[in-house]
Length: 328
Image (cartoon, rainbow, N blue to C red):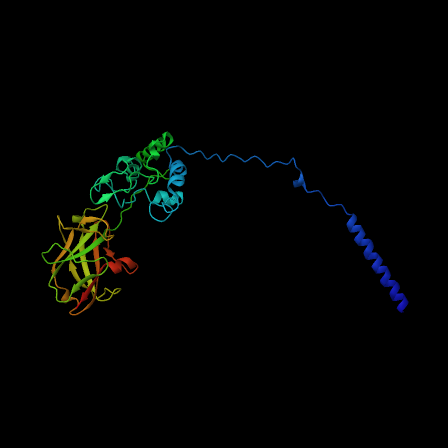
């Protein structure tokens, strides 16, 4: 038995050796990519050749390569040139935060009129120009690190392309004309003075007022791009001792003032003419001792059915700004 088992095992072992040997003799197929004469296929032309006066061309040749740089228009602040959609949406009919002409040049891009567009102005202004004591555009024209950019003949052509694009309606990448939105009015400033006095209480954050202080005047700066401040349908101010609950707030009517006092806006950077006012108001009617009084405005223009609430529960910075701290 043992001898026959040994013979069987020996045959099995020899068979394995033969199989392994056969495997080694098999020829491996050649790899076609090992051919040294093989060349990569020629790329197929994309056919993307936008018109020089199209937004695709302007974004590709100017905004993307010149302006979308680190710590510039890379999403840190508007206009946002990180992609073609954000560039278009943050410029066309986008209100200009700073402008040399608040009457005629209110938008970064005003479709149909390049001369009323801040974008064109920033690319062509005189370097280092001073626009009065309040507003100065940095070191001059953009791009900020190359104020001679537009002296290059190619760049001068780009500027003309931008001008033509704007004057032709500032159409989007699909050839659609932009539609101007109608935003709610916004309250961009709150200042308080003693009644009949023009000097505002010191801030920058809470407005500190002593509980022994007399009546105050509360000034508000209302801004609306489509409707003049004097044409608001209603303007109210509410006071609450709860930051987020105005259901039982004291409500007062704000009155439009044509030639209001000049105070800083909410950014505390620019002086603007405040245009609504609550006169001779006693804070004791809200809180008789010390504590915090939270304020909200409710401004309605003729184009909206409900008033715009400023601030609302989602605006952390606003809720910190619209606060009176009544001190001993």
